[in-house]
Length: 130
Length: 216
Picture 1 (cartoon, helix red, strand yellow):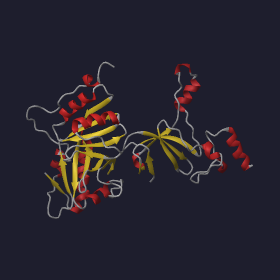
Picture 2 (tube, rainbow over the protein chains, first blue to last red; picture 1 turned 30 degrees about the vertical axis):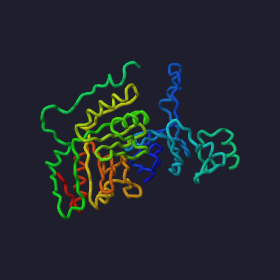
Picture 3 (cartoon, helix red, strand yellow; picture 1 turned 90 degrees about the vertical axis):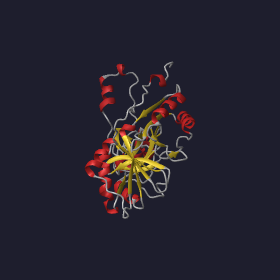
Picture 4 (cartoon, chains in turn orange, brown; picture 1 turned 180 degrees about the vertical axis):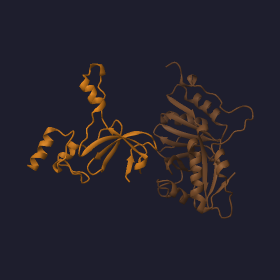
């Protein structure tokens, strides 16, 4: 079982106290009326399913019952950080693809997608591999 | 907002004026599962503090702390997962989440307390909910109380991880409850009414090897 750090309780708790709630940082379109069907459909239904770094929304269901964000590696299941709602992640695919490996995370050079990474960062990784 | 929270809230004493037989959430469990008596061999003793006043306070910590200090004489716990107690230990406030606290006072005080708090809080943005009917409080004492908890919850109850004055909401058996440690020897379990029977029977079963006794 995982021990997950709840940023509100400020301590590590058992995994069974938590529930994952899908992708984090999904911004609701400012003016839904002006959205095309495609934009609105993307917002409502379509989620990234990256191989590698993923920012997720979790809830401390048994405990403080607050939502918070988790940066997780979907390959190794490693949780790289947890942070409060409204904060930005410090560990991102871009940041890791740029050569800064943290916590032994295999990034793009291991054949993984670099969702959220800038074109330059991806190109530099692909260039390394070629 | 000209309408203050206090005037819009429906505050009434839920306790009947006349003598009506009241039963704790565990009354049915005592009836069906019994109450093993406390003996010389009992190394865990279970006691219910039924009919206490439970209230949920929500709002900003600073505003609530000021009001609670004025009314109860002690403030909110300063850190997450901690508990603050009155000098005699009869009243307590526990941190439940960043904007939520559980106040437990002796039964009968909650209505007056709620009114006083609403007066003190005035137009502040807050919520007070009397949840006395929804939960009950069990006390566990004895040298094997911690072992009993170790069998029941994944939370670390070692004194290093769970010092006196700590209180957490966590998993207990297949239910969840609030586990707290107001004194060195005493553990408290705040149970939901709907989980009370299940937890009670779990405690009797898990405590059987320590000859658990239930005080009346």
